[in-house]
Image (tube, rainbow, N blue to C red; front, side, top):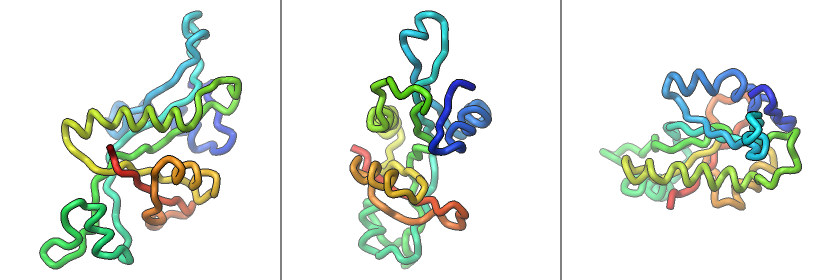
Length: 171
């Protein structure tokens, strides 16, 4: 895993190097690795990209309208007179390509499609309506997720890094 580099965001590489195995052992997340097939055949493990999946509760901002809450919840905007505040989501917690390996055709869209395809069987077993991503408030990232069907929900509550939460309907 030490060969994985992400020059755009060191936290992404640090997650893979320092936390992915521990998260796996604790059942907090599952991390899926993509290897260079040619090198793998020669016994070399070179990670081309990866993504991690987990479960997370999305806390809807107070400013979210009742109609929007109903769309997100799928059933209620309010329950017992109180606005729906929380929605369970599948979280794509990390997703990245190896910056040092630009010659590979693996794209961010490829990784995202693989992550979504991995989530689908879970929804067939336990249900679920939404995939959540939390990304930095950077136009390139926001546009990437918008182009791939995600919509803005909120800024991460109490977050110093100004992370943005975006969701996409499953299916």
